[in-house]
Picture 1 (cartoon, rainbow, N blue to C red):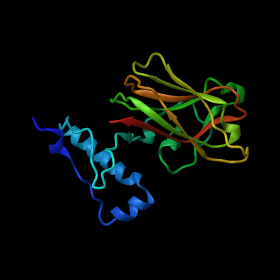
Picture 2: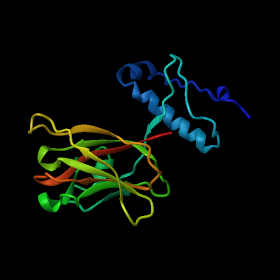
Picture 3: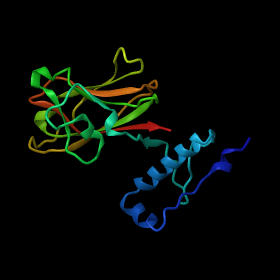
Amino acid sequence: MKSKSDYIITVTIFPLHILVEKENPDYRRMVCVYLLTYLQKLGSKDVDEFTYPDGEEGYTEGLLETFPEFSISSGCFDDYLAANVFDCVTSAWQSDFISKDAENKAYIGYDFRKRSIKVNKIEIQWVTNTTTPEYVYIESFADGKLWELVKKVDINKPDDPKEIYWNQIIFLNEMPEKRFWRVRAGIGLPGRFAVGELKFYSKI
């Protein structure tokens, strides 16, 4: 059986490597994550880390690929579809419920289909102060019958109530692999529940 040293891979992006590395160091890591995933699918089960020419540590956390058509939600208002959260183009998703009717009910999430995912980090882009509750529930389920609470998260709202589109990163403890993941509104919601972007990360 081959040792890990037999699988050490150096990734060089040319001619963009130097420029991209300075402007966006995560780009190289993203390429390595996709390459690592591809190698594992080919059967290289012992491949679990990369080394880089400059000696930095292997990247073990990857942004999960999502597709707009597999988004899930409690319902949407007008053209503010759940798919908007995952297409990186259009504005946002907004719930069809408003204020008190949306509290503890409205949600946005994702169906990973045939894959069960162990999510360890979520990045959420909030839209406005009036479309963001005081806290949210991160929930998941595997069998399609019962949502399980993963974490209750307080929202980091900006000091300026007029500020729009800010991001919040949520770290999760080790969780069992689940197919469905969602973010459900808590209380303190003045208007509709809205989310601009929703990104899931998993350790490889």
